[in-house]
Structure formats: C-alpha cells, structure tokens
Amino acid sequence: MIVMKHRMTFFRTFDTTLADLTIMKYLRYSLQILILTGILAFLECKKSTGPTPEPPPTPTTFHGIRVYIVSTGDIHEYSRNLPGLATLVKNIRDTASFVYFVLTGDFFMAHRSYDVKRCDGHTDSSIRPDLKVPADSDHLYDGMAESRIVEYLNFDAIVPGNHDWVYGIAMLARSSLKPKIVACNIGQPENLANDYLSFSSKRGKFRLNIIGVAATDNIHSKDQETVRIYSLTTSTSMSKIKSALTTANMNVLLTHLLDQDDAIAFSALKNARGEALFDVLCGGHTHESFANITGNAAYMKAGIYGTYAGLACLWWDTVKMDVVKKTARLVCLENIPKDPGTQALIDSLHRVYPHY
Ligand SMILES: [Zn+2]
Image 1 (tube, rainbow, N blue to C red):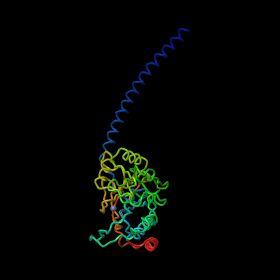
Image 2: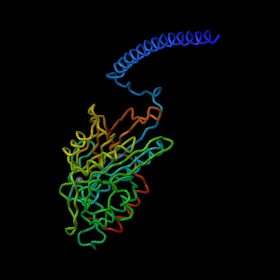
Image 3: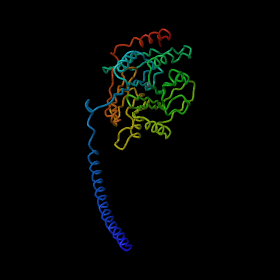
Image 4: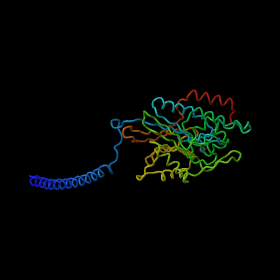
C-alpha cells in the first residue's frame, strides 16, 4: 500500500512534469508570435502616421476655441489711429472670449516729423507727433501723455523698444505700466520687467505665455541711466525663453528687434520638423508692416504710427490639446470708427499737454 501510494505519487509527478513542459513550450511559442505581431503593428503604425499631414480643420472636425492676438507697435507718440484701434479690440472682444492685446515697443519718443505709410500705399511726410510734450516743459511730464493713453488702452503685455527709455526708468516703472512689461533679456535695471506673463483658462483648457525680448540696439537712455540689455542669443536669454516655452500650451514672442534677430529666434527655437516652438511672433522696430505664416508660426510687424494692427488667430483644439490652425493678417486702422472714450482721453490730453 505504501509502495502503491509512492508509485502513484511518482506517476503524478512525472505526468505533471510532462504537462508543464508542454504548457511552457506553448507559452514560449505564443510569446514569440505576440512579440512578432507587436513589432509588425508598430512598424505599420509608424508608416501610417509618419508623413501623412494633418487634414486642415473644418467646423466638423474642430472642437475648441479661437485665441486672438492683436498687436501694434512703433506708435511714437502719434495718436490719430488709436481710437480706431480701441474700436477694433472692443469689437473682437465682443465676439470672442480669448483676446490678448500686445504692444511691441516704441510708444515713447516722437520723431521730429514722420513718414507715415498710409494703407493705400502713399507716404505722408507732413505728420507731426501729437502727444509729445514740448521740450521746454517740466521734464517730469515728459512721456506722461503717451503713458496715460497706453495705460487706457489696457494692453495685456508690453515689450520696451529702444526709444522707450528716453523719459527714464521711472516712467516705465510707473504702476500702470510695470506689471505689463515683458522682457527676459534686461540685465539693468533689475526687477523692472517680467520674463513673461502667463494667461490661463479652465474653460479653454489652455495656458498661454507672452514672452518679451526687448530692443538691444540704439538704446536712448535718459541722463545716462544704465540700461543693459542682453542679446537674444546669450545663453541666459535663450534658457529663459526655452523654459518659458515649456510651461504653456501656446506661446507668443513679443520682440522689438531687427528682422535678422527675429530670424535667429525662428532658427534657434524650432523643432526637428523646422516648426517654430512658439505660435506667434509679434515684432516691431523696423517700421515695416506685414503679417504671414513663417515656420508654422504667425509672424507680424504692425503698428507704425497706428496705421495697422496685426491680428493672429490660433485654433486651439481642446480635445487634441493642440493648435490645429494659425492665421495672421494686417488690419488697416484708418477707417475704423473711433472709440469715443479713447478719443475723449486724447482730446483731454491735448488740452493738458500742449501740442508739439
Ligand atoms: Zn520705432
């Protein structure tokens, strides 16, 4: 009986070992087939999603919101078209929830007279700056009129141009302007500017950063005040911009630079497909006016004594969590009805601060 029991145990053990071997063999073959199928599926997947471009968004495939960037710059104390600009921004804000209004520098310091290129193409050289305080007035008021109108227009972000230091650091540091100033490349004065400003929306499911790069050349500082601004290509500027780019879904670069410096931004801040890492670049400084799509980003220089606004639209898909379309265009401000509040402020400033 004892032998019998022992034998049975022996055979059971033997049988189990045979069964285990078969199962292991089966499992090994299954695993091999699974891995092979997986590799084939991966290759197939890579092949199908690689070169096929995203279809352009249509109302049926787009699920999201539109974000508008309105830009102007190089106003140089000339107010004629600012009431039209205020109307444009008001009209867009009446119909869209996400509108960001930016100033690309050189709002201070009038020239003696202007060559204003009108929307119809002709150049008007008879224009005089109208918000400039006369040179013999108390210097404390220098820049005050323009500062008041810039404050009233309520920009979301402002980058300093080379002329904006002309009335001194204190004028830019006024409480109405300072919180709006973005410039990641200012070394001196310290603590004047934000590197960037962040705007986010729970409903729109996005965070948008506006990153500033101030003018580096031809700085007009008041009374030899020290203004030190680093170039875009220094490692400090670049690392600040790159770290800002990673914290938002959408990014706007606000610059007051020469075209070749903007070109450096496009070439230094791009992905492997050659697309810009930012969504919009609003520039100034050169007094040109254009709006286009460069390196898959909206690129605009607009303003020039208030002749134009740049208008970029980002189609932010809240399902794909991606910008699926970008557009950029110039809007002529000459024939837009004047915003009464802005016009009234300009009229009152003209009474307080005599014309140039
Ligand atoms: Zn300018």
